[in-house]
Length: 397
Image 1 (cartoon, rainbow, N blue to C red):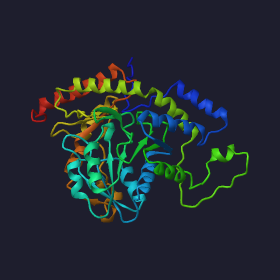
Image 2: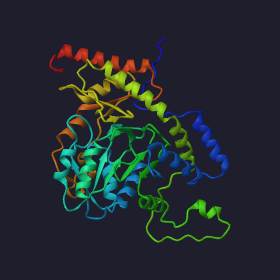
Image 3: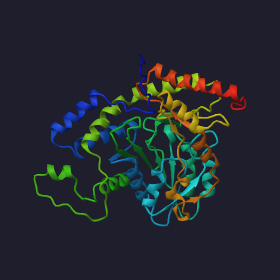
Image 4: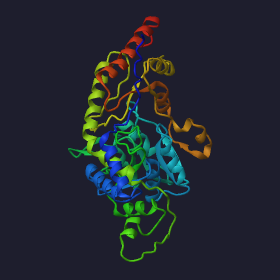
């Protein structure tokens, strides 16, 4: 009798009894929309990353939109960023009727190349939007120095980077402290911390924080908690355009439990990444490397394939063995929504970005992944490349 082998997903949220009990607590409280749990989650998240202010929202895309709006990005402005990222990064810029300006990624990683930023700056540049891709911190020091020299705000797309760290003036500090003007996080199910969906903004600016809280709830002058808790009748005002970007207390309750588990989750992910690097080191793959000043949360483990190796063929081989993967990070400028000339500006050649999309794959990595599951991934790749080399010794060079 054939025994079926369980599939290995590329990611799996780490949710358990604690999160289920947190949901029960909120449901029984009778307050399920934005309320006391959201406020507690914001306070705990700010303390965890070392930020003065944290504001919870419905997802990271809405966080990016509010961040750009807060620093003054408006119609006709330009925002420097990368094409090699999820499309939401550029979409948020376009929500402000501004233009994404794409520069290439580094030669040895998947983050923006700081050396290309200054040449992309024009009189219309209103912000730099850097991305901590796959949880690996980008070169914040270099980027922030550029921003300061040119008086340009720096916003961090930290969607993947909850719990990641940078070495800053001799101290390890969390992404989101923030080191730039605003940092934006995602709590999508593929992220290390998940609330089902959701986002967070962190900043040291009380004025930015005030704007986030106003705009996320339709521009309402009085919060629900204030109105419901008042012994006097209060009528709210709406003096400016706002949005429905709220997080629910149900989501926040899950987030609070996830945040408590985060150090352990990251420790486990770092051990898995270390095992991958050790066991894949002889296969001719390009393996991710942490700069000396960075500690990744290893939200994803992305490897570069040997030359003359077909990405889709490798992914299909793994899928046939019950192992899920994802292709390398997308390039926004190659998508139909960004093919028109007025959708973006390309400030540099994007050859590294395109190559990274075409020649990399993301391997399974998640909390709870067993040694047996990791060995299945490694063994499948080892067997595939052994057969390929036998057919064509030029594949791995």
